[in-house]
Length: 314
Image (cartoon, rainbow, N blue to C red; front, side, top):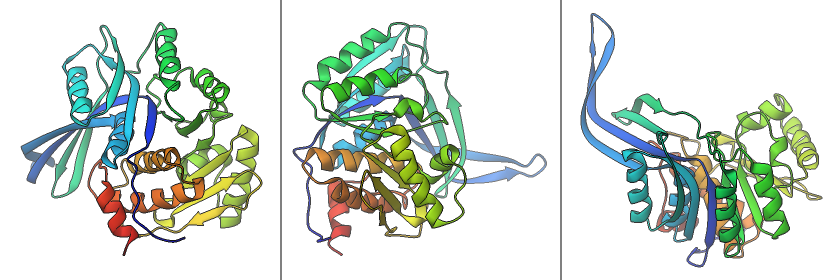
């Protein structure tokens, strides 16, 4: 495939899914209380950024695309922080604020480029009136051709079948980053992007390459998908399509500092590329390169279009 500079300036993508506040507490070093074997870290810097579906939207914005996110937040300061972060990233948002609910928040403590601990503050979002979310999606889909459903199993996409059905009726391309062991609810989507571990939870453990290929083809048929992309960390990723031979994209780099958020990068680049008119094969090619960049970074990080084009032209 010919390498060249690309841009996603004309890409427009709608993201619907679980919004999370990601917090990073940085320490230059830490020490152990020897008598209790407890690590002690002196925090020198704090960084907040949109996580979950918010990281997908941020990835799209960072590579030059335009993005809107529809999601749920809690009635608290963390929700207000998320609103400001999205605005700062120039991400359009249409959020439902649920009273007496806390925004899902994850705090990562980082020292010497290593994650010491993650603290989770979360209860699944419970939206009593799903029609409120559904109407927001209906109104927005009229302006988009690409829909990303970012499922972190936090409650926003509890009626995902209905959303997929709506998108299909409107001829919208639907990309889903799945979670859990119930993939039947994703039936009819255009593309699923599970990692190998998530894939094997559905189809069973794959000990050989031919098992991955056989079970990937079977899963596409079983779920009535147009395509399936299995991301495989240091082994790259494999694309399955209806009535086509699987295509494997070898990993650009075998070094992975942190795979956190790499799946968000993959689905973001595919969405932006498809919106710009690239084929699915080309979109996955670019996504594979993007993933090789972010896995070298610590934490849930994004990449920009210059980083992508630099690798493309090496």
